[in-house]
Length: 233
Figure (spheres, helix red, strand yellow):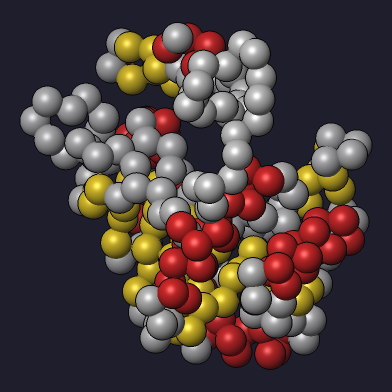
């Protein structure tokens, strides 16, 4: 089965973003599927040096190419630059669109892919929501938006919100059936034997992370305000 996995590895060329998306591709490949990676967000690339959008995606595609090569997918990725509609990875537009059109499944991780005729025509499109509550509130508050229509055009909907649709869950369904899912982990690429960094302020065996405090403004739904770590914690 040919599966196209979408993401933002090149768009936001950072380590955490890379792991978010690449593990879907690695997981499907480990199951024996014919996997391609696609980035087609319809937007300009983000320049991490200037910290602003840029029409020049050379830094982004160079990073994406290195990542895909590292994971044995150096010849199985497509990046479409929203600024000038050029293709990278597979650079011939006709060839890239032929590959996309031949897919059996589109795994649209975090809804990163802007559906065009080729991707919209894929028989089974999976919308994978990694931002529960915020996604559903946005859909419920503006059901006639173009974004809501694109989300609804997928055949299956999944979310990290494991209780959506349950009686005691306040997250709205926005009229969609949300199936529970979790972040896949490609265990072959995580070595538990690696020694943890020694830091005097970290308890033995504790996990460490780098995170942001807030990515966007809080959302209101039915008289309640829902925020991120800056509000919830």
